[in-house]
Length: 388
Ligand code: SF4
Image (cartoon, rainbow, N blue to C red; front, side):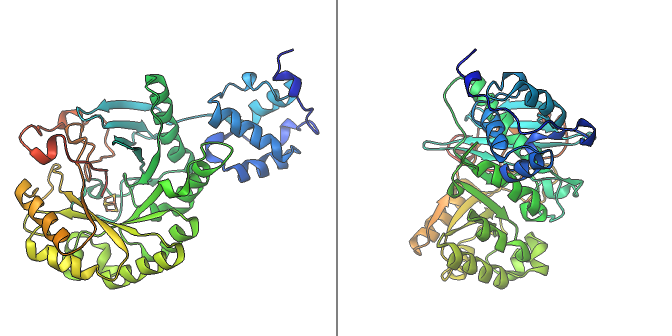
């Protein structure tokens, strides 16, 4: 008998296997819903914790290796759970260390996740939908209408595949932060997104601090209270220094205007005490002028926030151009001189089409890699996420 087998606790009662319609994907369960699922079959709460530990802490998904479960329960478990992850169909590594993973999410669809290294963190940018209905004009995903919202197991699956890939690489890297800034508007799929956040945060399991998880929204105001409720960080895709310009760049602003959005941001701050991150894409001639910088700082003077400036990343048929490096620097300097807390994001992953606004649902886009050798900002000192 192995030491693990010595801990075996007999199951309370056997499962009537005819009650089980179909095994469910383990990655779709929060700890609480797994407990409820087991309870339906007469299993104790702690069973869910045991399985969670095996899968998330020890990365064991072969039920036969879960040696602190009784033999009977192990054979019953095979009828209750599967452990399916979305297959990785492409994995690209940028010269700057950014990695892009393309996942098969059935029916010829794919979504992307991007991992972005920096000095003190390893941030995973996750997708929440296949395509997106928000149609932000600067965003490549926004050109592809919503096909489907991802399920929690497909969101958690992106994380686990990247986690396993890092483990296999053997460099001791671990995902430290999650941002929902990939394909899709997370609040348009809030049930599944917040379910996946429950999984990421579960102490028995991945155990990621809520402070390390950021949900970014284009401004779906009626759903924004859920970000405060979940106690995660809020990022807003702002991209306009006044209401008219924002409506021009982001159609959602016509439905949920800028003033209401900023009120909602203040409400988030009152509820959580946290600052909001404002994402601001610099579009040549549209949002990148010195006067725009002044208006932006004025607009945000009462909102507890920091601003991330993102020089626009080109994609096919964009209709916008990227400002020159000098223009970007001048905008940044003006904001700082006016006392704003503003950061110029390092764009990363442009050579593998993984930068902000460049993600696509289509498979097989490696021909769309880009020559970034002439840009001081684009090459190696600029950081970026995807989707916004
Ligand atoms: S920026 Fe985000 S919300 Fe806007 S279209 Fe792109 S994925 Fe959708």
